[in-house]
Image 1 (cartoon, helix red, strand yellow):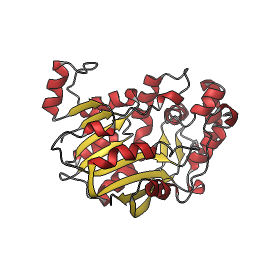
Image 2 (tube, rainbow, N blue to C red; image 1 turned 120 degrees about the horizontal axis):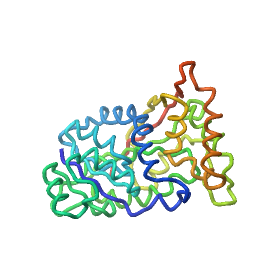
Image 3 (cartoon, rainbow, N blue to C red; image 1 turned 135 degrees about the vertical axis):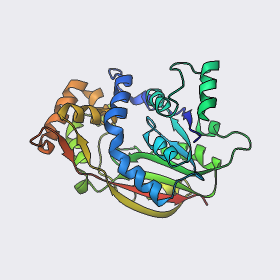
Image 4 (cartoon, one colour; image 1 turned 180 degrees about the vertical axis):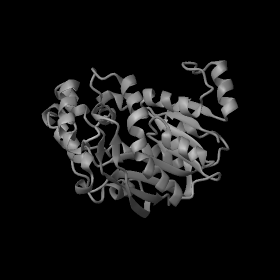
Length: 295
């Protein structure tokens, strides 16, 4: 496997409330929340027969779980994310021999060489070296359709990535399913009520039927199939559920409008109907994916 991690210049951090501990939140994402979408990753990889012949470019790759799963199938993987805290955790997963905080050093370069990896800080275009084969698959597994305007940055991201692909390459986009089948979306709507639109915060909205198709159309892609996947969110206890949902960043507008403690309290109250007698929290959800092709 040849994992590569690339830092995207477009920064999500600009909209993060200053009181948020980004490192702690990234760790919560990696240890609690990221695994909730594993059924989505598995379904897409199985449908597209991801394997040794796949060169995958993962945009907004988070802490690298989807990349690791593709690499375990033999794929060559490249990850792009602007959130350095999550990207550092992805490095730990994909490059366990690399010394922490050693970017640009000889030791780091040696670790990358042993792992067959290349680490580049920059945009998707920086992932392409001369004579490097084109990517055969591009994924954006971070679901859209929950926050107002959450698909706006995808156009620029795809514009930078598509020139690195070949004709017929697959591009996978993911989104929240119908609100009536996503218990978590109703929880988030309750918890984010403190967000005041007049302050420029992004509030929750219901996923629209054609969200993914509209993104693909704007990017000049041709839809080539879609599907739905059950991705229940299950947590060991209420504290894990609250921390996991806060780690998504979907409550940042409410945190900015009030404070983290108040939003955590709102989340806990909204989650109460999904708490089981043994203390675990379980919410059924359905996510949608679209497969599009580069013309």
